[in-house]
Image (cartoon, rainbow, N blue to C red; front, side, top):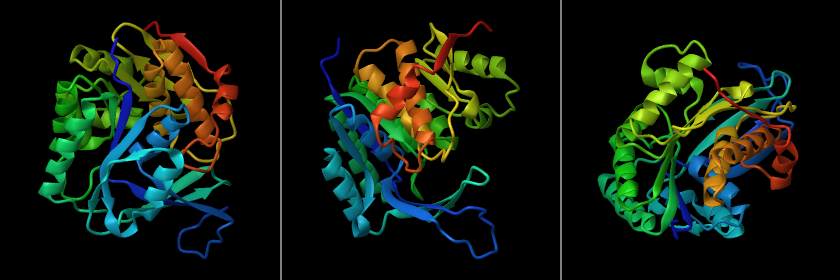
Amino acid sequence: MSTKTNIVTVTMNPAIDLACKIPDFTAGKVNRVTQYQTDAAGKGVNIAVLLRKFDLPVIVTGFLGQDNAGIFEKLFTEKGLVDDFIRVPGETRIGIKVLDPSTESTTDINFPGLSPDEEHVEELMRKVGELAEEALIVVIGGSLPSGVSPDVVGRLVAIIKSKGAKAVVDTSGSALVSAIKAGPWLIKPNDDELSELVGRPLKDSRDILDEMRRMNRAGITNVAVSLGARGALFTDGEEELLAKPPKIEPVSTVGAGDAMIGGLVAGVAFGLSLKERVRLATSMSAATVAQAGPSLERLDDAKELEKQVIVEAINL
């Protein structure tokens, strides 16, 4: 069994999330904000914060704008995260999320982000290689900054694997294609992202599962596909499971996917079976949907939902 314990998250395009609640949000009209909060975010950052709730050792890296890094530095200090981000000239992007409780919808307004140069990218390659030496898992999460080639994700996966760590990738589009070619240990597209990936509509669960099996055969050990409110499909090449989340009052889907990855990664760190990891991840995702922020506030909220998660073996 591996003696490596560190978990590393890589966020190349983090964001400062401004989430505001606006009932009956209407484009082209004056809208009144009833509630808001600002968070240092980005997939890898959200996942790291979540993993610290389990007291796991987590190192965060990627690119941060040096002009507004303070909100991230404050978060890292508060949560006990080891900050190994590369500082890049300029500002980390801002993302505005408009939550409309009347329609249970979220509208995203994303500002442009940083543009790291080739030297920054090569520095990240070296850094991830060093960190992966002592890491059990390295999670690459989120989109890529402007000007960074999708090939970077595949290169990172190859470096992580060469150091004996598990590469987990949660991205989409050409970045995900690049990752898949390098054979990460886990990917987690949603059903729409998987359809885009394979270049055709996926009609039903059987269709989705066929593609997941194909990925297993291509060397990706674990594949998770989110189906939104219907739950998620999971396979590790041996077991195939469907997880159905508990019925909850949804507030925001922001961070739900990050919570699922966090649960799966924590489950690996604790040596849980696939079924136990799936149950944990699904309950954490559901608990996140029931709140407004991008990261689950209390693990107890997820624990209360865990026994309501239904995990079934798939017979398709």
